[in-house]
Image (cartoon, rainbow, N blue to C red):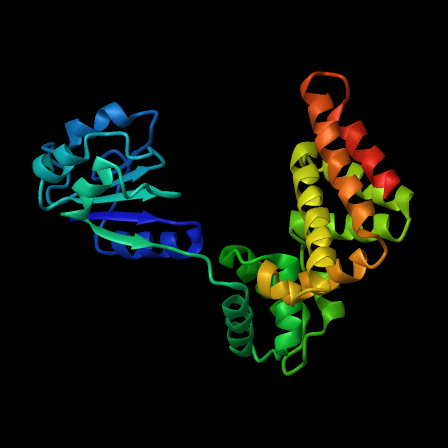
Length: 299
């Protein structure tokens, strides 16, 4: 049996892999359980007709190879009693390797839940712990914690320990207990800069860099948020801006409020500065972190 699992929702993907593992009475790495990556992909073909030391079938997990191996040979030469699970972040359905597998493999894509689905999942899951959460608070939690299921399960476990049974979770509880995603932390930094609390915003940036977050990654997120503010400003007089931008309601609300502190031209100039400083850093005229701090101070 051959499986191809791909997609960003790794929590559900690996749950599916665990179900497959349970179909084996005993798994021993190197005996009847093999992990293949791009580093040892050359060993794959030797497994097609090898016999497990335990007898019976074996499980081979092929992970993050970009399917850069002879998939046709896997389909035709592998022992039909063995199980092969191919795991990728994404696949290109135009490639021959995918087409070869599509004829013989069970293919499953694991997508993130959208923001609304994740909020409902959080509400339903917490009910099992006798903890109440309104849709508004669940929406806020998603805006802070993101849509990665494994991350939200971890945050819900923290809530289940610290919130008493039959109590309602508040937005203040989320702020106290839950860990924010990088994107949410950059939003907080943006809020401080918009309120002209530049020193606080710089300190927040320094803290993120201390936590080994790359300055370029932070800059990309901040640039995106300022660009969205500009789009809101541009669209709001003509149409329902969020029907075009399709942002999370809390995110849209925060960006719209922040945009009120600027003119269209102000935001356009900030976007221009990002492009200008990006060019300067690429030719070595400016340190990326210094350029980012200058932009924050000019907001």
